[in-house]
Amino acid sequence: MPVGTLANVKTITPSQLRDTGAQMILSNTYHLHLQPGEAIVAGGGGLHKFMGWNGPMLTDSGGFQVFSLSEMRKITEDGVTFRSPHDGQIINLTPERSIEIQNTLGADVIMAFDECPPYPATRQEVETATDRTYRWLERCITAHQRSDQALFGIVQGGVYLDLRCRAAEALAKLDLLGYAIGGVSVGEPPELMAEIVKVTAPLLPPEKPRYLMGVGTYREMAIAIASGVDLFDCVIPTRWARHGTAIVQGERWNLKNAKFREDFAPIDETCPCYTCQNFSRAYVSHLVRSQEILAYTLLSIHNITELIRFTQKIREAILSDRFTTEFGHWLEGVEDGGMGRWGDGEMG
Image (cartoon, one colour):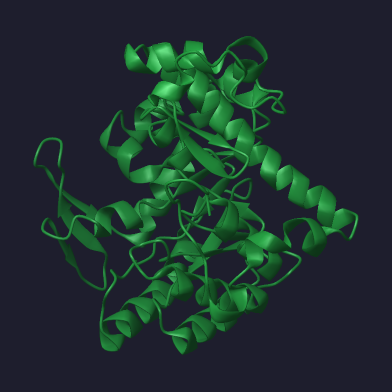
């Protein structure tokens, strides 16, 4: 899922986004509550109509963003109190309030309010957060008022695998419409993320969607898919586009590099996206060097297309029983927990 934090995927239109092959996008409850406010979104016909997107949408609960405000928030059993970074207003976000906001925004999938512990954290701190996340999930289920929205629960547990297993098994008993693995990609070593996914995902119902939050590199997705994960979201394709970086068949290319100034080939000769079908590396490099907004649009179109094509190829390989043969090289290191992140060359 491309990330559209404030009801837009940065620098590209919904029409351009559809052309990349994107089927579903994510928006952020916390940010939309602060600006423009859920009442305005509802007044505009709900999130889909407000932003002009006619495909499925997911809103996160706002928990991750609130808990990242470590110096500005207070956690209690009731919820989280924090000071708005926009105007200094004191805001109290509870499980019930998070669900109310998401019900008002109107996305197709909404997330339970959870406590995302930082990394590193003590076992006692993580266990407290994990248990509280379950109690908050029960309150979210009670508060949820719209049968046309699917509520997903979130597995926490930090890097403690027994806590992850306990949380996953408890959530699986609740017969939710979907399940997420949260609290990863928060600074933990790559090998721990791999182990968390390998242990947690198989414990969640295979007939329901399983969503790994905040992850989107080739190797991370391949390892997670091999473990049974179905959904991902990641800001990297568009964030990197805004820094002049293209994703090309598992590698990242800095278009500011001098070698692209007179390279008139498409960014990726195998890519069907609008950018690659109409413009050269030299032209996009020129736009990047000139800091033209069009550069970020063209690179966002390409990068999103590239990651979606990767998942489409995996889907085709699974259906043809060719996953290990064609994507096994991305799983290298999985036995010892290896899960590379975005490097300077290979996008592992």
